[in-house]
Image 1: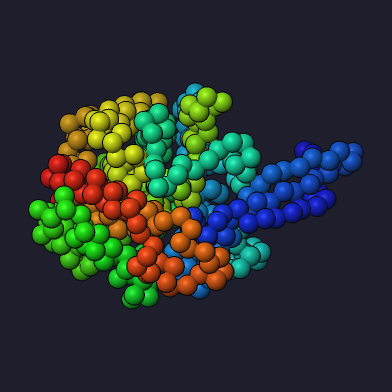
Image 2: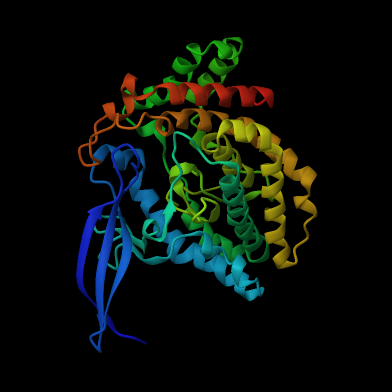
Length: 396
């Protein structure tokens, strides 16, 4: 074992206002030295809890931050252990779709089980390796979407294998990172209302959506009375580790010199839930793929997800009868309509015009989410195309 110690460190803020809210992200460059005096530098990222009180409330941070710590220290290692036990090829091991985690804690006090100001997660700095988030105002092209969809299927399949093969391990090592957290319903009233009202206020201004305003109003009225975070338990055997917030800002793509995507990393596991596997797929496709691409290649991307999902399950010699294509399509069609509101309400932060939010996370104000001038043509076009896509599928 090599003994190392920290010789020096330097931190800088990693994200711009309006691009990330749920945590403070710092670029952390650490100079290390071994006993022989050899120096090296680790390029890392430190994830801290937000300093702003409203953001802590909005993201239920004392629950969600702990969930992510558990995910990296307990849940993901349990999934890797299962794959290695079944001699899964190295290139299919699940930790490859996440950033390498160098350490995680909820507090400096090892006896403490509650998140405090000293909670931190430390990861490799993916940006310095060439990984980037896609432009949230544009979305993924087809090649990028293909890579992400295949990784998402792996992310869902391996926990299902553990659930079926070792239910006690699943209960003890996976479910703690999937506990329920609160959502938009605990925001200040004017902020929660701004998110909710953004759907109808946008739809009313779009001529193509006028024939469907009644359907949209019925949808948002139901959601107002039944917050989407309180979804019913998933149909089995489709219940799995669900990211629950998987859109452009929560995944990072590596492209080669020609711009071709070659690898993907999933980030921000703090909102994970135990939910139906297709739910993340629907949310990702309709929030984060260019609408014209999705309209043309929807069936291909759904099939690609399913093929990858089954391919990962095959590694464990399971009976795949319950996971037939027909059963998958049935689950997808049942879950689809229940994910529509989640998609539409999240178009507000996703489509907030760049530069409109200028306050730092520390100085974040209610108005940074509730102002009327945050949305523009990007939101209008995305809302129109997305609602029409849902109407086409009879999901709204």
